[in-house]
Image (cartoon, rainbow, N blue to C red):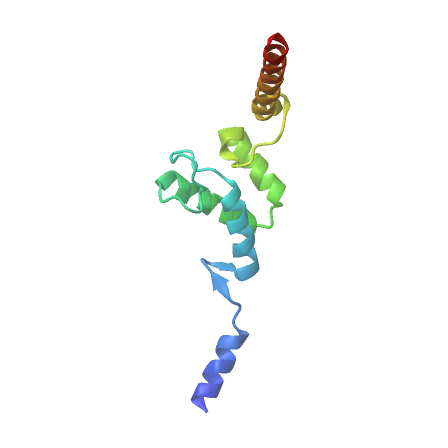
Length: 124
């Protein structure tokens, strides 16, 4: 009988991880995967053991617990640390140029190779 009462008591308790309900902790971890640790190179704050990453995780959990929207949490961290805190920064003017530069160079190089090979075959 005691086992049954204990089981019912455990079932009725809300499931929490790290002090947050499971849904909120999942949401917080999703946000943490998107944020870069400012101390480590290329690691998310979820994967980093740096003290700064621990502080950032605590901040994200607090904001999620208060019901703050995901975009507002992201924006607050961007205001504090800049766009470098995002593992996937937004595609803005300079970033678009950086992403497109390799394709432009490959295209330009391919065209130069094609033109030079065409001229060489006509000389023979």
